[in-house]
Every structure is written in C-alpha cells, then in structure tokens.
Length: 442
Image (cartoon, rainbow, N blue to C red):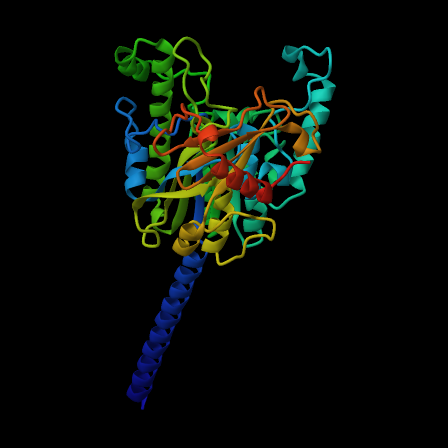
C-alpha cells in the first residue's frame, strides 16, 4: 500500500511539473507575442547633416561605416525630406507627425522686439515669454511619447529638444531641463552615451517597451571633432572648415555605432523598430564656419535627407527612390503597434508599399528664423514647396528675400541650378494648384 502511495505521488508530481512547464511555455509564448506586438522604437536624428554626406549615399571622403551598415539592413528612402529646413520646427514635426502650420512651432525663436539686440535677446523676458508660447503649442497636440505611453511604453529624450522640460513633450525620462536647444541633453553623443544605456536597462528590468529619442547636436556646430578625426580629414581638403565638418560627421557615426552595438549586446535589435533622419541639410562654407544655400532654404540641400527604417524580420532591406517625408514617422510607428494615426496626421505608413507607391507628391514650407507671429504660421512663411516625380516647385511668400517662382528637375539637377519655371508654365500652374490644396496661407 505504501509503495502504491509513493507511485501515485510520483505520477502526480510529474503531472504537476508537466503542467507547470506547459503553463510557463504558454506564458513565454504569450510574452514573446506581446513583445512582438509592441516593438521598441529608436529614433536617430542627425543635426545639420548634408544628404550626400554618407558612404552609402556615395560620398567619397566622409566615412560612415556604422550608418552604412545600418543602411544595408534597412529600407532606405534616398529621396527622403523634412518639411522645413530649420531645427526647431523640423524636430516638432518628427515628434508629432504634423506639419509646422498644424502644430504652430514654425520658427527657431520668438519675434525679436524692435530695438532689441539679438545677442541679448535670449536672456530677456520677451524671449522666455515667447518660448513659453511655443512650448504650449507643442503641449496642445499629441506627441509620440504621449501616444506610446498610453500603450505602456517608457520614453527617453536626449539631445536637441527646444520645447521646455522633457516632460512637456510627454517623455517619461529625459535629460533636457528647459533651455533653448537642449541644455544638459546636448551632452549626449559628444560626451557620453550612458544615459541611453541606463534607460534601456531600466526598461528591460521593468519588462516595458521603450522609445528612445537620440538627437545629438552632431554634426551641428560647434565643429569640434576629436583631433584624431580632424587629422584624418585635414589632408583631404584645403578647407579647415570642411575638414572639421567631415570629421564631425564621422564622430556622429561612431556614436550611432555605439548605440547599435548596445542594442545587439542586449539582444534587442530583433524587436526594435529603428528610424533614421536628419533634421535638415547642410553645405559647409569652405571660407567660414557657416552653411551655404542649405539650412533655412527651400532647396534640396536644406530639405533632403536619407530616411532609414530597420526592423529585422519585418522590413526587407533595399534602396528606393520613392518619396518620403519625416511626418511619415508617427503614422509608421503607430501602424507598427497596430494603432491608427490621429485624424490630423497627413503622413503615410512607410511600411505600406501600396501607400508609398500611391503617393503622388510631398509638400512643406520654410519659415523665418525668428517668428513674426507666434500664433499665426501664415505670417512666418518664406516659401512653400512641393515635389512630384522629378519636379520641384518653390513658391515664395511675402517674407521671402526674393519673389521668383522656381521650378527644378531635381533628378537631373539635384543642386537646383537651372530654374525651368519660364519654360514650363503649365507644370508650374498644376503644381501650384496642388500646393494650394495642401495648405494655402491666408
């Protein structure tokens, strides 16, 4: 009898163990499925970076091995754009999925009062009051951190951030405390990557999906690359300014490599949707520290950027000449989570091939550096622009320094040297009508 009891007990123990293993397996499978349904999201946003200045885009001097590797693993839109060629409105559009005239953050800074010296303006009460108006504009619309927080995500802000304390953008974690550009947040990349690594470790420990906003002030000036990189590029160009800029690009690439390597080490790459873009373009002036015909302009040199999307096992790596724009980021990310875009979002899901092929054109607008009116985007417009197929139309506004319509074949003439508007009046008319249907400032 006793022996029978031991046999029954052993069988019972085995059945319990088997049941427990099955339950654990089912729980593990459910957790894996849940994780796949909520991928981590990493945004890498370069700063003042020319669209040609990558190895994978064909530059012969600039070395970007880590971004080249990322491109080889990604869907690469070679003809990506941002809607505006100025940092603050461009970043606000990335995080909201809205055009600047929708979220109303159109400029870098508030209006400069009459008689106020520009050098003293940023420490004045008028500047602080103006920035507060801009911060409230962004608070009034949904942002990616807020939308993802509703779905259980943690989010981290690092680098460039203009809209006050990081929490005002909906981030759960962050570096910036509220100053113009990003104060402490600007240490990311140039000084350390540790805040990102610490945040990812926290998210893993809490078993929470995460969003990382990596927007270092790189290669943005000050162009202060490590001596080892400057020494590499100094013999390749007669311009010290160009050498410094090229070295900054490679330094930025190195930091991207550190982030990509960390995702690999933590075995997170497979379930991480990673998107790359530059906030606006840059052509380095060989005679001085500033740009030429790029940042703040309506030309491809200021607006064009490669857009990369990597999601291993979900996105097939390839290069495409289809049009893309950074307001597509939010709809793309939300679609990956199985969530709809907000009604105001005009972008598309870049992972929807049919939607990408069906797109006929992209549009945007460029604005004054300092606002004329913080509440009326129409008063700050310099140019509106649209690209359809190989044609680009630039329509000036009253604030523009010159008032000539410009039409370019940006495939044959990507540096926009030959204005073809006078030779193609019907094309100008049709593109102008399309631009007005998108947004007509009044």
